[in-house]
Amino acid sequence: MPTPDLVIYSTRVVTPEGTGPAAVVVEHGVVRAVEPPPGPAIANRLDVGHLIVMPGLVDTHVHVNEPGRTEWEGFETAARAAAAGGVTTLVDMPLNSSPVTTSVEALEAKRDAAAARCGVDYGFWGGVVPGNAAHLPALAEAGVLGFKCFLAPSGLDEFPPVTEADLHEAMPALAALDAVLLVHAEAPGPLERAAGGSGDARSYRRYLASRPREAEHEAIALLLRLAAEYGCRVHVVHLSSAGALPLLREARRNGVPLTVETCPHYLTFAAEEIPDGATLFKCAPPIRERENRERLWDALRDGEIDMIASDHSPCPPELKRLEAGNFDGAWGGVSSLQLTLAAVWTEARRRHVSPDALARWLGERPARLAGVSHCKGRIAPGYDADLVVWDPDAEWTVDAARLHHRHAVTPYAGRALHGAVRHVFLRGNPISHDGRVTNGRPGRWLRGCMRVV
Image (cartoon, rainbow, N blue to C red):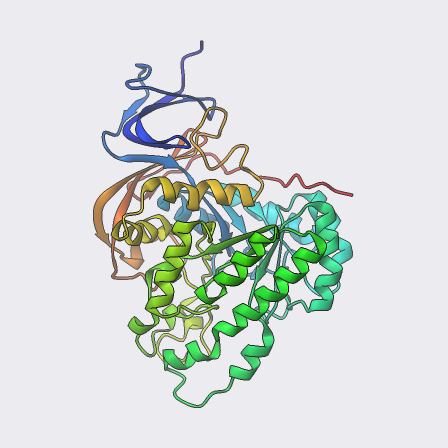
């Protein structure tokens, strides 16, 4: 048998069978074997002691914004942040770039930008907008991993929301492709009724009231009804309202093909703790109350929420209206790509959640959503050797200026977190060490393999 390229040994290796001592044997970028200790004795052997070895994170909700808005974030800076934080695969959202990814030509522009600059593996979601249902098969054939739509305004005129009539056109086409539809689930009616409230635009409570839970509940009810009608796989992105959980529970009992994600900021922060004027915390749907956060954690542990994704949605500092603290005028989005593992673990450890659960929420299940679970999201023979080695006991304070995101703008600044990433490998190649990103090989485009008809 050929000599392996790399062996990593730890007393805590997270595999589908659980966590325990093992040697991960890597050959030609792929896990050849997971062996009992001590494993093969070769020169390129990394013994990390009691540090955790886990599959590289698969982040299926990243707004890279390139081409067209690279000054917000680009593939180079996003990939560096990902690598430093243990994310070895990211899937880029179809909006915030210009052009938006609603045509094959736009996808090709996105592909070319990533090929030149992205240092982790990557894929793309296509966009569903009014009137483009006929173009969805071509986008699928061109390699998108699935599709994303908004039910309320996205903030960008180039990516308008869809109506129920649009979904009646798009969802049968997506079902025929066996393609998943990711949905920003806020309905416009409740948002319009809650808009324009009186009071100080610096008030977080006022902003929270402008994005009521009912907007999520109404949108999810519509989505689930149409998913049942057409047999279209649906995925609810960034669930923030725990009040929608009974709807989701009932839909699953009725066999609706459904998955759900939430985000680190909904699992970390609470509305009661957000000061007025703190626009760094503005996102949509909003960060809700403490009791809601705890119900989201319960739903994760119970399997009602499938996974966690960052929803990394950056912008230049001036668009956050930091000095004015005006929630009405500030861009909504949280920058957190580099911080996902530490942010989630910090809260998980307080609730006695195991690293095995993190591996499912941040790796295995996102890989399944993106259709790459044959090669990503597990430490097992035949899988890509995407590995993150991290110290669960290390405590550190977030210095935004030391993050690799294009802009030092994040609500996590100054927050104490547990869990420090020590080594990250992409297909067996080291890409970061203690936050220092190496200039490794370029990432690989993960093309979709939907059934094109």
